[in-house]
Length: 253
Image: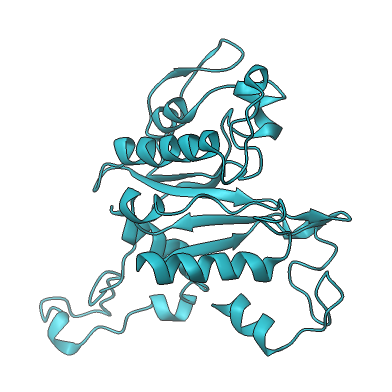
């Protein structure tokens, strides 16, 4: 499996209906040797039927809400665990999946990415700082190291964590391609003036990335059940602005 296949699978907005999965065989595909009613669910089937299992949202010790609560394992351990290897957990126990994953998105929080591991260094952990760029470079390079087309796909991503007055508007941002394109930017944060809590500003960041790199990027809604309805608004945005053509078009894109 390649990154493109995994990315396109994530981008599907609806699964085929049950009626779509029932194939009506042609006369040529049926055997004359069997006089009864012939039925084979795989006859004339041309669509993919093997599920590929993965996770769009995994945090490592780079995320504050993981690292501060004792989950200190890093990128390498996460990928090794996902592809079926045994690792030692943060509590010192040996752990291993019953079935390896086919793909994984490590989506650490863009805000304060890596801060927990370096609190003593007092370095700034925001876009524009050398430390932040170095951490993102490591995220991208590690995904490249563990990406194994046809066996295991490591998709590059991060979590944008807008949370205003309890309105959870988090998005998991997933890059379709590898380091050559994802490495041209750093993750978008919620910290002004570089970042923003407004989804429309996130969409502008995504548009700018695609225009600059020629790549593709996907933003998945995350935990919309605790957004107080603003993840999927029907009358107004969380900012109080009415829904308009720009919002609808950018959201759909």
